[in-house]
Image (cartoon, rainbow, N blue to C red):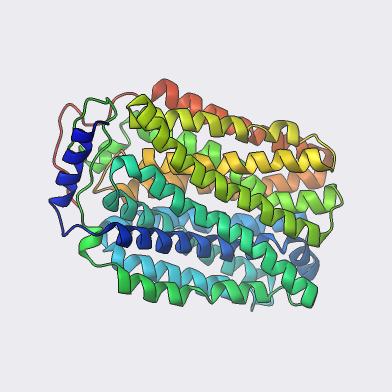
Length: 438
């Protein structure tokens, strides 16, 4: 994008509410990063205690998969519910509510004493954690210009890595201190929501979440204008929604397979100790942190190199998809450094796909952004909620199938790239534009 075009975009964006400083935007990114950190810390307290939960409740792989499926079902329902609410209720009010409730739900997982209670707490956690994404997506869509949006989304997404990095270390520390104190991980991570809520209210005003949305200049012609709008029902008549559905399923399948099943695979199948698995999982998610930030940075570089933001996103997606596909050889490697190194490359690549997906997600609608992301999230998490119990059942019947399942997930990112590269096409509503409204 040329300097003149960038200047025009900034002038258009500034025509709305009073423009915020760069320092404020950086602080907002930290707040969003911490929200994602809390989102993942609350869910990883569960997966990092997978073996201890199975032992404590006397359950096997299939029942553990069912508990993970309860979270997924809640997340699916929450994606739909909060996707619609985010477009109707001010994000300034809705966002802190969902953070506070999911924090309490996560905390309750360490207090319940029955399997039914644990399943209920995981469902409620998933339900409200899903509200994070439509709220966060509406916030970055309105606060950042197209050329900065993938970077903003990468910082937002990198909070997942920090949560996934810190929580295993917390679990290891608790286990070293007292092997029977693993429930404290739920209490600690769940107790962090209230300070975040206070910081959000002190920082973000109503005007900040009502700014106009500037659309990406996909053709590279130097055009600067607000998002071209289409009625919500037409979202489901455009192929881009269905392409994004295929993409988000492909990249989430790999990410969440690793999230739920890697600790079990390393401990049960490959014989690593719980302490080693905790430390390695932290290193794994540090690699995902680097990958998320690298994705945003590289997308900006590629956009400047090619002169086209969309082309920059596409080239970056290809690179990270290739790294993610290394799960295919990793699935069949024995315990050792080649396996661990391969897994770290998968980590770097797999999370780097998400900021680009979110930026593409934000190109369909401004006023219906919550519903676009929510319906995509609902569809994806319905599948994931079914997937984990099925995986658990298959592994119980035939443990030798686990590496084949892991390898299959590595094909997803390659398929996702092909879908975007071949079929993305023209922007919906381009021929009959309507002004966007918040």
